[in-house]
Length: 432
Ligand SMILES: Cc1cc2nc3c(=O)[nH]c(=O)nc-3n(C[C@H](O)[C@H](O)[C@H](O)COP(=O)(O)OP(=O)(O)OC[C@H]3O[C@@H](n4cnc5c(N)ncnc54)[C@H](O)[C@@H]3O)c2cc1C
Image (tube, rainbow, N blue to C red):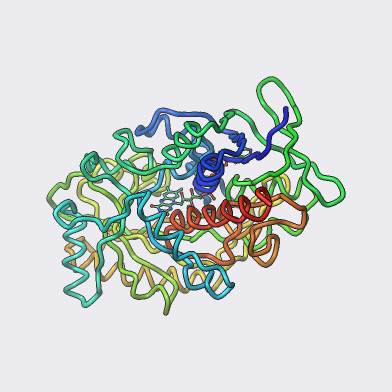
């Protein structure tokens, strides 16, 4: 089989670039390792989160025990976002000479990003907002790519939205397919083949065995974990280092009485400490199964009393101290610097939760996990500012090119970078 352009992965970066290039009439084939899945239930989510129940967590465990969350399915991890849309790393990329102003504007328009309306915030969020303000913290509504007319505030964004209220990469995939792009699911790319510094195609594994697909251009978008594995297996041994994951902890407390409905998570944000101390705080409540899995034995029953729980997430800009090996093994230590940021976020969260009325004895902090893996094929290290590797016409279009941890929702930035890459490919590499 031959294709003009192969895109590996159908998540945020892959779907964006496939949509943009197919809109220019180019012959695009998307190879996706995962499949379509039913959305919105804990049971089906176990099929697409990359971890396993045997590990007692939905994510993959690093050698050091840090949990990394991602999904393997059509649409990638975009399917399980909380719909947060912010311009992460805008300034950092600008200092590298990458101006994304135009692309951010387009992305915000296409994803219909708007601030979370206050009248749709739930009781839990409002309680935390009031308590934060009483203590002098500045709270903002979170910008969201959610169609609030369709949203039922079920609080299950991380299981995939069954109401179609949230933007996902599947929206862009649908447009790409309408433009003529071909999507092959259940197709895991092992490596890229190349000769004399020119990309020639990919080696792919499907249910019917191994095959090779030739292509003039290959764009890897298998995510911060998937892409460096393919690169290393293709002989690019400079990939895999500098893994970040935007590490996070949740601080929980229980109200003595009163029950609360489920509601949209991360509806507000305290981001005043982002630049100065490297963390943000935002209201959160994990799913019942997730809570049950990670709570210690004597606290497991709390998973059944989620209606009385208030929670705040501390998400940090973590050190790029991790690594993904060619065999998929993840190393992600929590450095002293990371611990300092997490501790400070936890201290402030505890103050806010107490102010909101939780009982002091009920305060509990979850283990460290991260849901935004990236940095493993960073700009300036593995790719140049055109997102091209040392192999001609082998590009990367996902979070692995981020130069550093954003400590904030990355989707909008991945969309913007992928849009810019598609323009470069069209103008410099194909049309000339
Ligand atoms: C629970 C959770 C909530 C989140 N909430 C938000 C949020 O509110 N806002 C936000 O901005 N970000 C959020 N994120 C982060 C965001 O989802 C990711 O950063 C983003 O999806 C990464 O995009 P990507 O293109 O790098 O990778 P992905 O979107 O993960 O896409 C990678 C794709 O490649 C496929 N793949 C992997 N290996 C191969 C292979 N060998 N061959 C073929 N295909 C392969 C995967 O199946 C997947 O489809 C959240 C993440 C999680 C886990």
